[in-house]
Image (tube, rainbow, N blue to C red):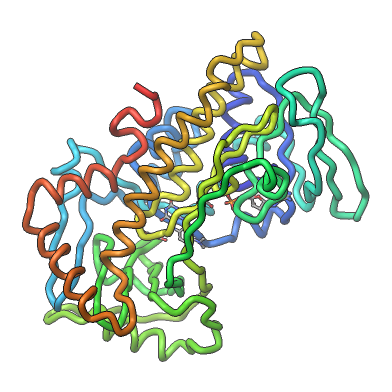
Length: 392
Ligand code: RFL
Ligand code: PHB
């Protein structure tokens, strides 16, 4: 269920191992290919896309970054990621480009993706054997149907049907951060070669990019802020005020996309219920500050494919039994990193004492090689580092 990065990559990995799947997607192909979201691929994510044959365009068009900038108190500090993280780097490549590449690969291989088809209910998933699960759906013409299968993979994001189905049985940990991000995509050449994470008393801002002509920028705003409160001129003025440092110029251009996202953390435990497996945002949401959401989705389905192939081809359920625990260890590490970055970089209105603590933490971070190395290793490759994918 779901043709986001999790569902599409899972379907692709399963097909390569000879396991048939059908992807049900509520939205149209155009919609999922245009949806602007994440942009940072961890080292292990990029390596997996390469290894399974869908990394070609990412390697040609993606931007390889070897550092990030932390900007605070009117000064710039570079964290040399690659130098500190054993030669590894990140790739800046839009999530919707990953989605396009995966859709192309699935369709070229004869895979089935049913767009405009919403899963509305799941049954028969509660036991581990015996009953055959089925997904009820409604297609674009409003016709109801049922798909019988061996396992159901809930890759339908934070607001999908699979999370709702397990609501009474799962333990759900959640936390609302008192911030939201206003994100824009602008036709302006990036005014920086590396991402800038900027803490300012007026609020956090992030300067990212998608290509040599497209900038992606974010501003911390109040949760629930209506977009109408932020006309173009106010957005650019606020970005200029927060990002200002001597000798650096913003670049400005037409804004072609904008959205506001509240920041939250959610973890659903466990991630498997009988023959229903949750993966990606359906199972967990992290605040975007650590750039981990899509990377976690990719890491989940890598383990899920590894677990489903022996289960479905040889009746060997040992890896499927470990799936949830193997994922959750990494998920909580990512929650910790993302929450730590969020709390260090987003000032709370009227909390001057907290603001001073944030500056002290940042000061320590950029002046301690140990602290910088910790950030670099986790930012570049939380997934592959520390054996969090292989379980080693
Ligand atoms: P998705 O991408 O939400 O895909 C779920 C799909 O399921 C469909 N769906 C259904 N289909 C059928 N029946 C139903 N009942 C359905 N209900 C839903 C949906 O239409 C959708 O197509 O989840 P997935 O695959 O788990 O992928 C997760 C990522 O999308 C998400 O974690 C990231 O975008 C988070 N994220 C970031 N992650 C990173 O790794 N690096 C980043 O730099 C980063 N930046 C971000 C982000 C998320 C953001 N927003 C907007 C939430 C920046 C932002 C602003
Ligand atoms: C992005 O480019 O969209 C992006 C980059 C870094 C983040 C979040 C989002 O932490």
